[in-house]
Length: 148
Image (cartoon, rainbow, N blue to C red; front, side, top):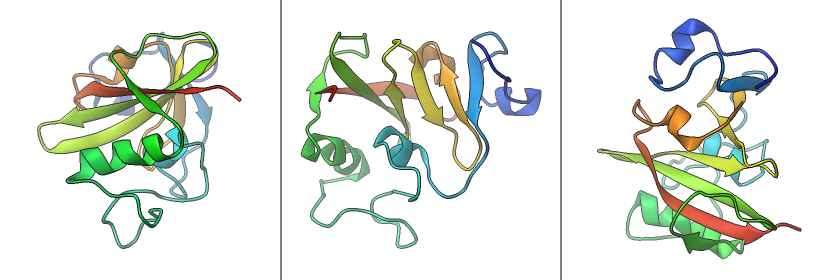
């Protein structure tokens, strides 16, 4: 990866993230979060049921994970078995830990992934595994949509 890596203290939260498998792609911002970033929105904080966040009317599910998944399905995504790159498609991966959904990442044309780390920077990472095993848990839901 090219570009600047996250500071060491940020990497410590993610045991599989190191200075060789990611780079910062934009500065820290609290204007948007990972769900919005993977939805290709960078001016809204999006989380279902949070009164301080934006959430589209009518997008709902039984729980947070289903509701977040439904956001992408309603915009043309369909569930897939894995996050493997598929020519002609963009992909989203939703991460879950024992408490529920935690993160979403968007796959780039290159096959690498882009993530917004909370209120911190956006990064590009080569694999989903780079963010697994820490506070985000595991990538468990994969969705795809034809590239425009």
